[in-house]
Image (cartoon, rainbow, N blue to C red):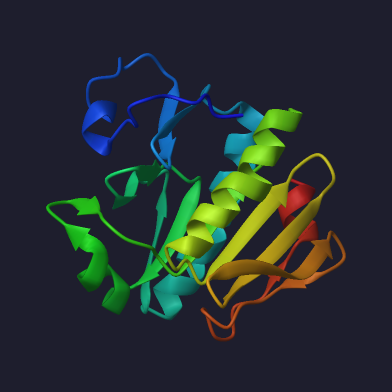
Length: 186
């Protein structure tokens, strides 16, 4: 759980933190620190990056980026595992080589531990919804499921829980269909 810090930290304060292998994020001015993800986490994220990149080679409507730093405002900045943004959205949120706003899709791969789960399922989901992320996928590599959330009235609400036998689709990427058995059984 984020520690209460007064005064609130800002994105400028993040630049002063050490380059020590940890991920530093801000939610409402509170510092969230996590260690670098392990190999199972990175493999799953890499597979999603590969599959979406393949789709985008045939349908060049946007780009997928791994671990981008995203700044929503002075008190909120995260480093999700993956994002997808259309070319139109990129033109709106990329400034000076940085992302300052919400992409259409954010993908987080859960790391082990209750605190990591709560951070992705509650804290980050609320933040992403507040700032206009249209769709959010939470990938659980241990349970082999994906929770899909879509934006509705400023909140990311659950629309599907997909398991290994399912196929993942999204209105953000027309004709994209990913068999999840290929993702979890490599």
